Image (tube, rainbow, N blue to C red; front, side, top):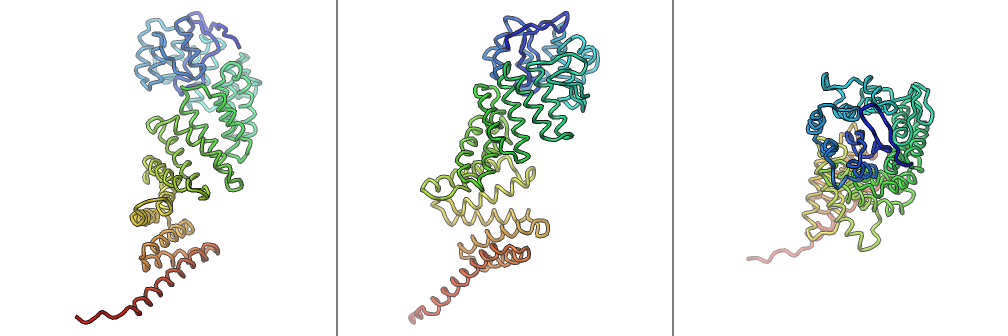
Length: 443
């Protein structure tokens, strides 16, 4: 779609398409006023790139992207005669502002003309209303309920909002259908927006076990390939795709080899300070993939070392206080990596693993999670046996065996019995060696 001017009111002129829905909020809903000074930045933003140079008239946009909301508002408030575009942008940044600085939504809709639907989109996105534009049922292909037409990037956002609304009422199929229509609206004018919408549809499919999500995530990444300003969004898509591939690994182990590059791609796009949870999840997923891969070659030992590093990184974010479930799972994986990973300090690693298992046991209640507790006890008992602490090992293994028997996990019962039998054998050998040792010569 070619650029085309739209006159939303007597005091402003816009050039379409607008870079809406691409970069994070609040910038993702700010309008760019028309002009030769602002147009290069508009095109950069539309492509998902941060402008190398911000014109003076987009200083509020620059500050909004940097997270300086108050600074952006101060820039907009400095305009003695703001037009509809500036008043709309102020509304995005501070929708609850009282008069005289606040803007009445009804008046703003009238001033924006055919773009007035954006006011309702903002109210829905910020949770000020439960109803997206056009949700009364009079919407088709981006039509707005009051008869105005939203097309292109704006129509795509309208349909996306409707998809979010119907997901909880009409189900995933209805939401995905709306998102597919949104992609059709966005693709000709805003490929990055189309990519993000593809990813949203793929996420819904993944949540409901539809393997078609993999192809959709791949399509999303292709559309986002040059969107350097959407690094966190791209990382999240890589992470979702890696997770979708990883979930198939039980039936298709080769999927782990496909998943790993996407975990790495996510980590190349974000740092801990950019998006801590995304960064930590990518490290956790990479570690789990490496720990799951079969140890068929020398590089397997190297993978275990990398897995341990990634687990330690993830645990700087997933703390016991804030993320107890993730913390416990990662601690178990870390303990396992210490037990089986390459090291010149074997005994130190085993002692560290025993301590980690002990910490995790505090989160595994005998009544709420008996099998989870039994697995930790089994692992800890096995490591204690390797360290020669047979009495402590047997105490852990006896409890583990009882819990496995109580819940008829026969395979685990056999594994624990095998370790207990080996302890008994080693104990008997030690007694025999002690009995057969020659008596010390008299002094």
